[in-house]
Length: 184
Length: 352
Image 1 (cartoon, one colour):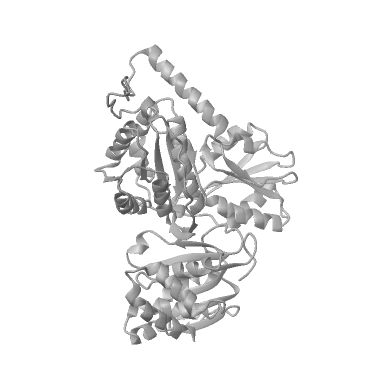
Image 2 (tube, helix red, strand yellow):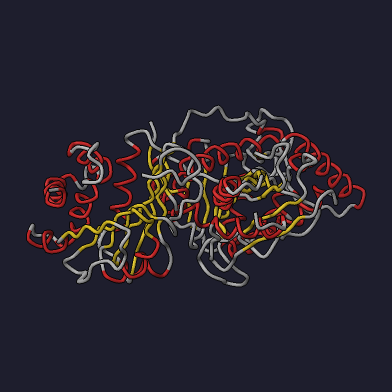
């Protein structure tokens, strides 16, 4: 959290990966989590040709004040990079003192920045071991939650229930397991 | 109870809450979530949803629905709105209420699918023929998109006119928490104009038409429209302004860019450049009132995702009192707060 936005405490998060890695869904879950605490939130996807394959990313801003621009193109407090092109592209916009969460199953380098915190998580491999490649985003979400001890597992489960509804109910235990693997 | 919704979905739900009885549309990015949402929600609510064969067909179905005396809405994006302009002129001439949503994308021509405000002229100045205006609401958040869509239906009924809700692609696609409150719709006297069937009780014929071959008759109709537009100008202009005495520069922006400008104004004030922000909420009628500025304001900077369109109306409102400068990006590029800060510092002439 920093004080860079129009007022109050603000966290600016950018989540990026290949299309299909669940970057946009992860962003919505982060937004819903903070919304549950009564904060203002915005979620803004990249949209356009990149949605049909290639990279996908979304900006999430949470704040106890008014949120101005909904796009995180500078001063990201948190970057969740699910693949290497995302780290390459967005590493420079992380604010000094910010955090990079990197999917080290795919990303085979650290950060070149000396002024940010780098947290690796073996997200894709953990997801595959759990039997579903698609839940790598949930593992990374667990790692994100390490930055936010105010959220407990049941907060996360409630958001998953809200987000996925009846249709996704059967998959929630698996998603919870993935999140917990990332949160340790 | 707040829910997290995309702007496009929220506008759709707002129309349902407002009592929209029929939706006619045709797909185009970046507004596709609207017809997608309506295709299920309208049918579930027992109302009418038609994916027309073209934009031209959709706007003429709107004419039919409005003439029958029910609340109707269509949505499109810039090139699709271009195709609807003839129908919008007919709707204005026939004094038919309806709501038209434009989720603006970049042009000209087929252009691109990314966000833009390069269709200010299209909705504010009208692309159809004849002397007509349409009220235009330009929200800057998902909640305001809901509130103004609901209001647009009331204004359409109250003044019997087509009304626009315009957002750029960003607002259509972004998600924010929204709340839907119960609505009491404006009560329009449908029997006074609609071709809704006499059923043996009305005792007079209603005719909906835009053709009038009598010079005196058509002029009278134009005077009536003018009187309506004067009323709208007098009553319905909306804006927000943080400009106060002591400010040296006023930034002007609408829609999502006004939020970027808000960050810029904060950064300018932190740097010791006294700045305020004027945000037109109605683009027509244009909020001229907002441009009666304190004497301390020496300069205005208009920030748009276009090559400069609203600036014309800002200049008319300023009427030469202070100079208006422009900063814009287009083609789908969205300016950063830092760009606006730099542009503002440049025009106030300082390395403060």
